[in-house]
Each structure stands twice: as C-alpha cells, then as structure tokens.
Length: 401
Image 1 (tube, rainbow, N blue to C red):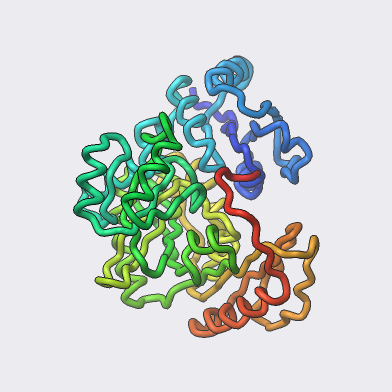
Image 2 (cartoon, helix red, strand yellow; image 1 turned 90 degrees about the horizontal axis):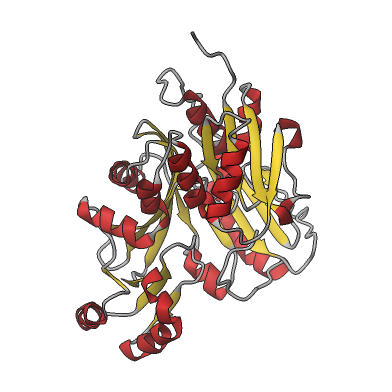
C-alpha cells in the first residue's frame, strides 16, 4: 500500500542558521522537528514552520543525543536527519547510522569535516593540494620541514574556516607549539603556506552530480581577515572566464572524489602567486557563512538553503529541477563594527540590494549586471568601512553561536 504520510525532517543545529531550509520543508508539506542548543531558546527560529522543538544542554555527550533521538523516534517516524551546521555533521551521521536512515554516513562525513581526510582523498584523486603532513609521527614531521620550504600553517583538522589556524615561520617555532598541544597534536595537520588569491565555489549537488555552482573570489584571504582583522569581501568572478571554467571543473572533480550524494557544498581553493595553479584548501557540506547565500541568490536567483531542502525532499527523484538561473554579479562586504547598530545609509548606490542587520556588524549585499561594477564598489566600500565602522576582535580559537 502506498504511504502518503508527509516526510518528517529532524533538523540539528547548535548555531542560529538554516531558517529558510526549515521554512521550505514546511512549504512542501513536510513535518519539521528542530533540535538545537538550550542557549538558543530565544533565537529567531521560524516557529510557524516547526512541528516541535527540543533544546539540548551545552556539551551533552553524543551518546546521550542518540538515546534522546531514539526515544523521540518511538513516536515520530523520522525520514531525514539534516545537520544545518558543519559542527553538527558528526551527530547527524551517527544518528543516521544508528537509526539506519538514508544519508551521509560517518566515513563520507569525515571527508567534509576532517582537513586531513579531505586532503588525502583529494590527493589520491590527483587534485592539487598544498604539501602537508599529519601531525602524528615526529620523524615524518622532521622530514617534511627539512624538505618542504616554510612558512607553514598548523590547522585544526575539525574546525571551520580560519578558526584556530597558526602560521609557523621556522622549524624552531613549531616544536614548542606541538609541545603545548600535547595529546591533541594528532588533531592537527601541518601544511605549506601558499600565498595567493582565495576563491570559493558554492554548489548544489544531486545524485553525485553538481547541478549548480557559483564561483566567487574573496577580497582578502579569510585567514588574513581572521588573524589580522579587516573588512571581509567576496564577489562573483567573470562568468565564462578562465578562472570560472577551470574552477567549475576542479569543483566537479572534487565533489565526485569526496562522495557527496546530495546537498550543498562550499569549497575553497587558492590560486598560488608562484605557479598560478589552483590548489584545494577545504570543502564543507553546508551553506557558506558570511551572507554568501544571500550573495549567490542576488546574482543567480538560487537560494542554497531552499534548493538543499528540495533535494533532500526529492531523495533521488530526478524530476526535481532547479529554477531558471540568472547570470548576474553580486558581492558581500561585512565587518565587525564599533557601533552596536551601525548606520549604513550614506552608502546609497543602486546596486545595494540588502543591508545586513546584525549587532556590532556592518554589511551590504550588492547586485549588478555589470561584472566590473561590483569589485569596484567593494574596493571603495572597504576603505570607507575601515574608517566608518571597523572594529577588530582577538582571533577566536573556537566558533561562537
């Protein structure tokens, strides 16, 4: 007998995000259950789209989450378990495997969470990556620093973005840092620092195929902004350009190598100043942060959260199609602000399509049909933002909600 029961989504996030994913699931007549952190009880959740909400205490062991969700599954037949943030991917994968619910398992999950695993996988599939070594065997590390010219970067294997990254200038600087890490050393990877321009590709993936991708370029590399402070910018690259075509292909090869079946991906690459080649940096199976989704939607009409929801609902049904893609250009500018609620009204060019409202942040999303207009505006705005708003906070070792 055909089961016409609506799909039930269990959405997990310990950060305030994914509202549009949940709204879209509800629009498509799904039941939506949110599991989030107790500290986010008063966050701006789309409560009209939620059938139930459960709040978890901070630092609850994953085993206790499995017990709680298994108890929930006695009365709710769960069809999909979705981690809306990178830090919840392991929890979601563990639950899927325990409850035998389709979706990404623990092995594939590590290719999108563990910087060592993703590098080894990419290298195995002949994708360029900066020379690296696991921080495990000290003999291997000594050989590496003797044969790979510094400086190097020491990266936490399971942090997001530039959080926790340390730049190492010389061999004698490395060993004291490793001594401080103690038993945590193996949770890091050491990689050659590659000066260059950093790009990101934001994709929608269905049945291992990239069905949509948008290539963008950061103004300053995110690591520079995170470590030295400054104004964050990113913008769409020229469509059909050499960079666009090359990164689209590299990204397709990467997604195939890492094994993403369906969902979204945010991948970062660097074009080295030295040899002009692209090198893979990292890839996450999530929507990019820093209002990248809003920028992509401004340029293309594609909302990554909504399309992710459609693909999860379809569950492999090839009849699910993307809307018509608009081929314009967009950009984001964002910075910490000295003011609690900064006033951006003096920025009044017609290309501004969204003013970001967030405490102690100043930000704008821009849109234009002219590929040269957005980078020019962002360069001008970045100088003005530095004077009008910019505040610099110490680099974080851990993410904040």
